[in-house]
Amino acid sequence: MWTLKDGGSVTRKPKRAAAVDIDVVEFARSRLGFFPDQRQVELLGVRSIHPERRIVNCTRQWGKSTVAALMAVHRAYFRPKSLVVVACPTEKQSAELVWKARDFMTKLGLRQKRDGSNRISLRFPNGSRIVGIPGKEATLRGFSAVSLMIIDEASRVGDDVYKALRPMLAVGNGDLWLLSTPFGKRGFFYENWAGGSEDWVRTAVPATECSRIGAGFLEEERRQLGDLWFRQEYLCEFIDEGHQMFGRDLVMGALDEEEPMRF
Image (cartoon, rainbow, N blue to C red; front, side):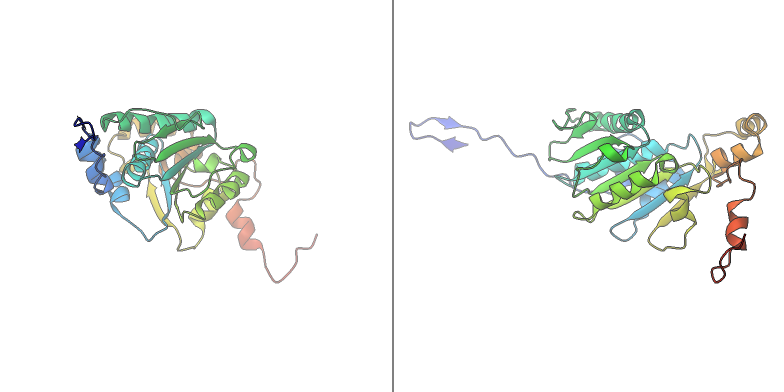
């Protein structure tokens, strides 16, 4: 309370207390009422060196977008003025993930507000933002000092988009998460998964390790989709495109770097 010169007084509005950081799994359970399955716990509970480089190669319907939204909200809530960028192949997909984050904000008792500049966005009382953008190289530039970048359905995002996004992490020394089911042996998602770089922490979650997907359903899917498509969508395998005469591994194995190809 402040005392004024005329003898009156005014009560100072108390400052909002800074949130005390807790790990992601505990945050999900105690604050959001979300109980990750065992594989989600394993993913969320392991911290790698900073900045993080994570690849999650997972089955359809495992809940990767929910996990990504959880990570986004945890970062924004506990790190004031942080910027989280969510990139997906389309604007609709980016919006769906950001709206999942919005639902988590509601559970935290926070009012939903946009950031004033971006249509698909959330602004937190501590100044943090979550912004969703479509995977179009020509329209995504302009963000900087990104604390966490999430590329969902990464196997469907073009290499040009990936190369345009990465510089946004430079100033903030931000973390990068790639999440997707496979989509052939091509593109940055496959190259980073199959490459030998130790920069990345790799996590594979086939449908056989998801307790919410039954064996009977998977057998039906195998019959309906065919073996190759089933292995890609549910078993996390990178399958060569059907129109290729020779598989990528066969072609790469036949090349001799010391001898030029002769025709």
